[in-house]
Amino acid sequence: MKIIKLTIKLLMITFIIYSCSKDDSLEELRTTNSTTADENDLLIKEYLFKNGLASENDDILITKEDILAGDMVYSRAYLELQMSEQKSNEKQLAYFDPYRMNYGNAANILFYNGIPQSQPQWRAALVRAVNIWNDANLCLNVRISFINSNSPFIPKTNVVLANPGSFSNPTSVIADARRPENGRAGKRIRINFQTFNASNTTDEAMTNVLVHEIGHAIGFGHTRLSRNVVTTTHIPGTATGASGDFSSVMWASASTSTTTVKPFSNGDIIAARALYPSTAMNRQQYNLSGAIDQITPVDHNGDGQEGFTVYAPSAQRINFYDVQGNGFDFISNSNAGIAGFDLKSGKDRIVALDYDGDQDDDLCLYRPGNQVVYIARSNGNGSYTNIVASHGGLAGFDMKSNIDKVVSLDYNGDGKDDLCFIRPGSQVVYIGRSNGNGTFTNVVASHGGLAGFDMKSGLDQVVALDYNGDGKDDLCFYRPGSQVVYIGRSNGNGTFTNVVASHGGLAGFDMKSRLDKVVALDYNGDGKDDLCFYRPGSQVVYIARSNGNGTFTNIVASHGGLAGFDMKSTIDKVVAMDYDNDGDDDICFIRPGSQVIYIARSNGNGTFTNLVSSHVGVASNYTGNCIN
Image 1 (cartoon, helix red, strand yellow):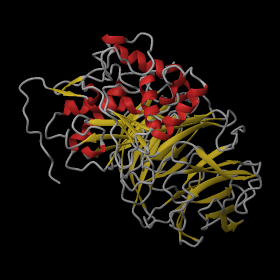
Image 2 (tube, rainbow, N blue to C red):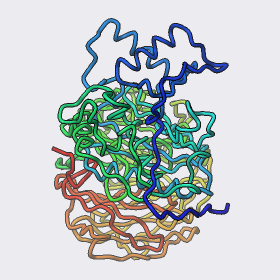
Image 3 (tube, rainbow, N blue to C red):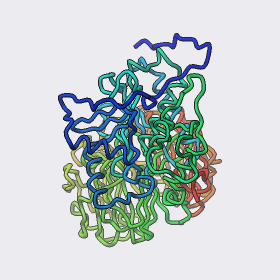
């Protein structure tokens, strides 16, 4: 589509007046086919005025589902619930708590592709607005994710272009936003596209409007609706009465410059920190100070951008993060395990899998030696629901040994991840096929290894990979310290055919150390999984490109670490994840017990660019801003 170019040249500073600056006297409550100006509507208006949620200067439109007051939109059901609660408790929580997000919640501002490609200025303006909120160090975490309209992930806040008829006053409302509900950010920001678009304004004006509307979506009202009216509850240290805060990004009558991006006022910063105090964000930080801390890549919401969970077996703590820019975005956490699994044992481990094929990763949590296996379904928002709580193993595998391990794979290419259970040293390999409903059917129950690999050593390991890009995950078995590497190609029916049986390492990596590890990744996005070999404590990192036929070509043979991570500690760990959804897998390095975590972006050619080099663990802003 042809990009619309800005044609208006400004010779002086012009201004866009927010809808809420309208100085006309209050109009009669307007009604449509879906509205009724009944007594309840009048009570709603009275409640809005009484609680500072609207001004008599606002155009107010009441429908069956929404209350539109200027550029703020409230859920009618949620507002009526607050009205009923206030009748029994006239003392509302400070700062009008019902319209504040829960402490620590990230404001997920997600840009839908409902905005046409011919409007790249709006995409850029949204990115700028999100960055402005984050860069202000307000102890808030505003996230942006560019997703497809057919994504199974339900975003918290959609940013969309809308027709003028959708607004309470199409001639003056240039944008509106839903207020938070039930502790979560507002679901929608709308832009009155015909009144306000890239052909008749500037990038700066669009950015200012979005900064303002994001404020509404995460719980902020207006600092001043009209003379002597201040919205919501007054926060000590901010302006009151007729003076208002004329420099606030939330000033209702703000003259938004079309040549300058407006900064946050001192009052904005005070208010933000009062509503979202930094002390509440301690839980967002995970310092990786425990020697047994673990990390698992997880796409918790199915948006294609893999994040990760870090957890402390025996300590019951688990946190979820995404990678954003050059830092981390906090998603959720628990200090009591997750989905009924208590994480009380130091043996506890977590594997990510999409058992039901809905695109978001679920969790398999297990406790080797105790027969405990739980499956938790992702709800798409960082929370998980237990669907399996077994204390007798799973799919015929009893989980009775302390060295039992679980690997997820889609061996038959049906889009639902299955589970491979191994018992190193005992020749035991089981595979359970996912039925998509939380149950697993045993399809392999071998006590003699698999695909020629005997599984006789207690050091034996297995990694799932699709080396030939046929959509079915294969298995790589290896024995560190013995130079043994086998690969079994999945035939899609539970059988595996040996295609590699090496006793001299693979792709130049000799596999001579008992510390050697292997990770599967598609570093170049060609659909065929490659292999990363590393030797913790020796600075050795190799990457081998899959040729699709069972052979691998060495493309990285480093003895000095990778992407700035030196690999000097014997406890160093590597996981692969596609954090930016560009099709090629990136790498995360951690050093448990030392607070070290690095993220390296794949450039697709075997080189990796360092994005994050944190020595203070993981936090929503790893540099320490807003973290006590």
